[in-house]
View 1 (cartoon, one colour):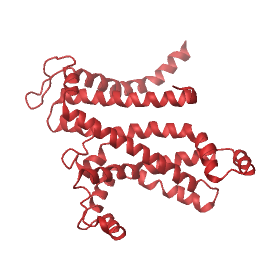
View 2 (view 1 turned 45 degrees about the vertical axis):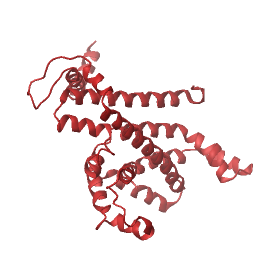
View 3 (view 1 turned 60 degrees about the vertical axis):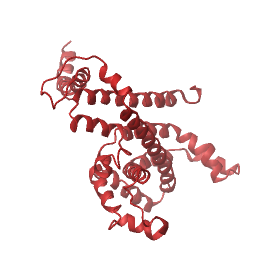
Length: 292
């Protein structure tokens, strides 16, 4: 009995911290989402309206446009990050000394502030003096007059590139760890049987790497759905609203238009979308080939 009391006494500060920083804000924001609260009108929470803010979202064309943009952005970001991550891992997973230094160096983009990366890319993509713009113009003259953040397609491509650049090192290291932990005997047996490198990759490496790929997909989906810093610092949701992902719409609704009730409801809808994707990935991860 004394050990139990002592154990929970030690855990009590952690419980209090979690309650104060996680549980209470979640409950409070959900309660706000059930009210009509416009800070431009009053500093006090408005009347209780139930789930009207949620119903309002489903009839809001701006919300659906943002959902579509978010799905396109997240889908391409997750796909490119995983494909490029696997490619980088295949190149850097060899047991060579100089590659160990490269594996240490590639973590630098991930260690940088996302806001700083966004501002840096905005500067380097500038059509007048940007470094990236000049490099692209040199190698691809047909793109010399492109204003990278001036059209919906190029702005989205730039935003996806930034997020992929930030998360690629982390995902690559995950895949490198998985590749270096694979038993060498399997690959030696495949080589003895005459399997080519492509056949080995498709039939041995990728199937063995699949659990890590699914975990990476879960993490990248969560990271991309809640992407905020690169959007604010690189595109500001523009041009127009072509890169206005749902997380940025929530910010704009709450802290530009001060519609706190509707912003809270949008936040919970985004959370439900994220949970939905995570559940799908987790079922695939747990059940594997038996999942239907």
